[in-house]
Length: 331
Image (cartoon, rainbow, N blue to C red; front, side, top):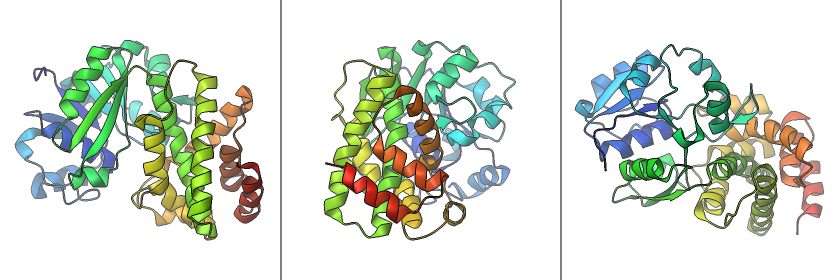
């Protein structure tokens, strides 16, 4: 492990907090950009994030905290972006420091709405970062279980295997196991799609569907994911690996899943706006459903679950009627 390299996390939410915790298990110092001045000052006084995973206490001597994104970018060799995709562009617009020569890893499970690109492609197309300097951090892994130091697994994807191994080494610990992959596009799309399917699982639960239906829904979801990813990026991959199927299952079934929680509220009769107002965290599946639906329209892939979630969230269609029709399409 090359501990001369410097790492910085860009983001202040629960997953960002969990990643900082993982890095501090291995590094003497970790850069951490949080937009909120209040959160930075609270962390300096109380040693924990006031808004997310507040049970995790940090050694302040290990943190290079700032609310200036350019300070973190200038500090680090490896940048880990953990900002909700809906807000990524507005944060990047504040950059004055160049990121062209940085190694950029995305732990963002969403599509950038302004460009319709997954995050890795956004950095490549807009910021001209070579794909060999881009990576993805995916699950199956919930931030809340990292906070509890429960055994968890990550997949680190990059076209450059050495960079993936460096990131994996610095995130690994007794309770975090990492494997590397070269499927940077497929794993990132899987991380996006599983949030849509988790919203579907939540809607179904809110409507009163039971475990039998949920199992069929998840079975169909992994096959739909396989068709979708194969269409956008054809390569040899095992869709049953943990980065795809495992991440789908933990997001679709876990009580920690914000996307399932969001869908559950929709199924129980909340409007989209009221459900969003009830939640303290962003449900990425909401934004992903629109972009995936529009992308699929150009790819002509059969995606009944994505279509159903899109129709409920964006066409204001009745969830009960939409899911009754969906149920007839599943096998």
